[in-house]
Length: 118
Image 1 (tube, rainbow, N blue to C red):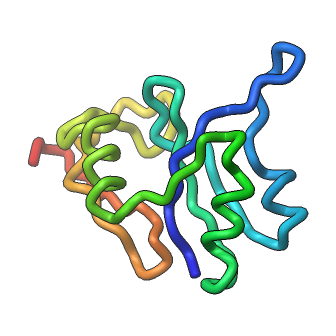
Image 2 (tube, one colour; image 1 turned 135 degrees about the vertical axis):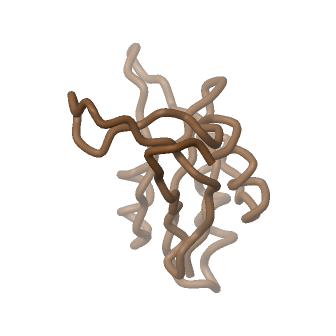
Image 3 (tube, helix red, strand yellow; image 1 turned 180 degrees about the vertical axis):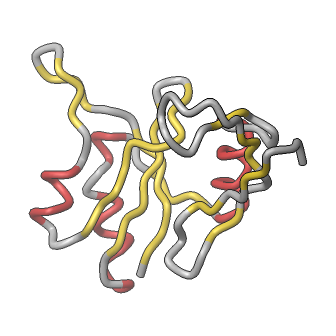
């Protein structure tokens, strides 16, 4: 099962730590560090469905919580609004505009782009 979570970094000795090591030890896959605002990060967590609640509970030190699809898409649009300017390649001169966010079958955020505003 894949879901999005929201979390904060754990600061030890002045270093911000993400939950990768904690989750790897639990046999979960994590892809995080996205859509950062006000000290909160978002990431995709994949694990067995019957272990999801326990795995998220084990991240309490990170203040982790599961996000609904609607919550995630609202955050994505807030952090990167429709018509934000982007480039396909760094230092490219062709400006592209971000379209509305959606999720694919693996819950990856998908954004169409266009050379003209949406």
